[in-house]
Length: 388
Ligand code: ADP
Ligand code: MG
Image 1 (cartoon, rainbow, N blue to C red):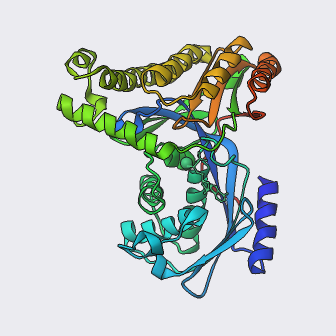
Image 2 (cartoon, rainbow, N blue to C red; image 1 turned 90 degrees about the vertical axis):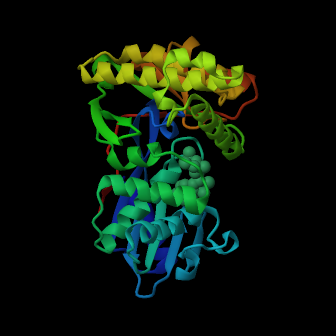
Image 3 (cartoon, helix red, strand yellow; image 1 turned 45 degrees about the vertical axis):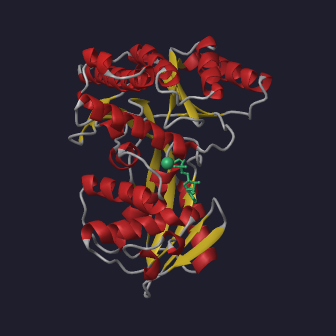
């Protein structure tokens, strides 16, 4: 964290001059189980990983927002005209700074509060576009900064909705509430079990280290993907199926109902959501009961991956090969995490098998001509907080 704070401070000084009023950090996340269930009012089990975006920020006298990011080396400036309601797309802020403009806009839209301007410098070690939610880390760090700078008190639920709204309605990226919730509400040593219908969140013990386990994230660095269209298609498949079954959302489907769906594709989509919810509930129940040996999660993670591969069809061969290599290399289980179509795989492995597993994954990536994968240890970490 110290390094990120230093980088954000140096960036702030270079881009705007002077020193910032404060520093706010927000993490990326993995999702242990419960993929593509959030927008079906189902269950998810994410936690924050020890990779953060730090926003160094100050209030400005004029109502303009200036943002610099180390990731792009760019400074973007925008005024209130570009964050007003019913803005034609062409006048909105685009690119990465849209996440920042989106937060300013969503704050106004959802709380009625028009905040003053700010200067914000961002430094991050969350891999961008790797399915680890750098976008939530960005928008949550910015929201945390703006709330403190302008003394706006919001509870966590509201912060989640504001950052989700920013991403959905301003940036135009369709996401559920999983990423933002994990980034805002995670606590060290726990995973968040969340009911996406009631939005009740429960921090459950996640004692990885007690039995010598590690959760390794593999950023497969698969080539750039155009997954938004596919994501929207899956959401639509789910909505159509729910309509067909006369339920509010697929959360309410019970197994016998599969038969009444018109075609195999719809049956498979629904089966993924139903079984994924069951897997997530099973895991949450065992964690809540105080299970200390997390190896049981391995099989659930593998079943989840197979379901995402065969029924929901959101994996790509590179993800499947990575899961396969992880298992060959000694993992208890592995699965893609995030929306799919590329991104990252998480692997549950004994600490002493970690290197052998990573070697196996690296080896198969070389053999198939994939990019060199990157590995991170995903210790359950703290959610967004002020760091200086
Ligand atoms: P993920 O959230 O899984 O990393 P997304 O595609 O949702 O993937 O978000 C990645 C995008 O978020 C980047 O392309 C960029 O526009 C923006 N972004 C995230 N973090 C930063 C950052 N530190 N600086 C600039 N842009 C960022
Ligand atoms: Mg994202």
